[in-house]
Image (tube, rainbow, N blue to C red; front, top):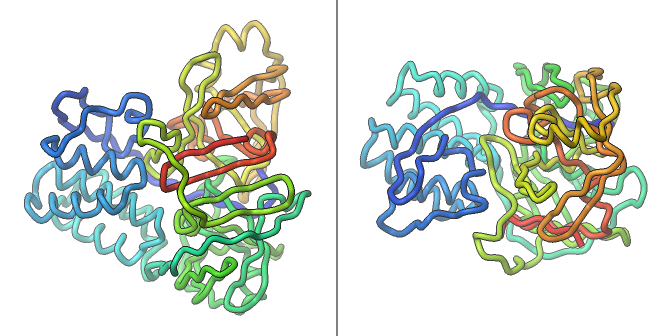
Amino acid sequence: MHDQHVTCRVLAGTVFLAVVATQTPPPARVDDGRQWVDAKPAITADSPAIVRGAIAAAFNDVATAEPLLQKIIRSQPKSEDAHKAHLLLSRIYLRSGQYKRLLENLEAWAASFPGRNEVRTDQRDMELFRGLPDQVNGPRQPMTLPHDKGEGEFSAPVSINGKSAEYLFDSGAWISTITEAEAMRLGLEIRKGAGVVGDSSGKNVTVRTTVAKEVRIGPMRFQNVSFIVLPSQDGGGILGIPVLLALSRLQWSNDGTWQLAGPAGKSEPEAANLVFFENRLLLAMRVSNARVFGALDTGAIDTDLNSNFADQFKELIQSKGTRGSRDITGVGGTATVDSIALPELTFDIFGTPATLRPAHVTLQRTSGMGGKCCIGNIGRDLLLQTGRLIIDFSTMTLQIK
């Protein structure tokens, strides 16, 4: 069951693209980072620029990816590689809150490739962001902040335009989100026009947007932070991926403290277990010594596995599973789906075991619950049980200790 805190998922359309790479099998599509996690190919300066750009984008190396992709577009504006480069830039700008650049890239993409299905899909999905500014991130400054040990355990104190709040850190939200009541409390102007987003229950919600001129987390200052506004009179909000990426490193401890924006840990690219797939952040793990990917969702209290898991582990389901039903709750309401409960299931996360007792397998493939890419949605019941969680976007690693 999904967290009762306000949550939101911005779901982009499916894009299937092929890349021709030397010395490596052609990837399924350029924005599918799963292919690079276990066996990073022999990439050199002589490898195709689109492959180097795709790998850099998958592992959040924007400083490498963006100039490579922009150079492809400048030098070969009508080529298939330029088409793929526009797609990857769209992914990068959306998750970093660069909405003005996102729309500029989309307009150039549409002008060069009119009629392409991928372009039309992005034009439809990104219209909600028209008119929003680029988020501006101040210098990164390490800090220690408190968190509650109860219901608000994954929330942190923030300041919005000088007013205090306590917001959830949600790695499954591609844009920060507040309720209408919270926007009014903060004195934020809600923009005209509306869009539709999907949630984890598979339902759609009509939303509007607003922009906070200043968000402060400890000593760090963010400007022009955009929020989706949910039609609710309950209070509360979440900070999504654009803010979390700017913090770069998040360390949660069960002693009631956050360590945020600290120096990067040590990790080789081959050891990364976080990767981007389309507009989702995935966690690579092992179950019964098999590689699996889960959608990383710190906004969810519970981990919900899906039909992809049931298909991959049929013998386990048949021998140990008990059939029933389960409620999945998102901002659009609650959906009841058939499910199978396993008495326990152990995940290997970067060499550390974590066990769900029980593990729930919901028999659905909802996009918001990882149905397109993964064996399920990975929530806080799995991530926080060892007492310390470290998410480092500079090394693209997640560790539990």
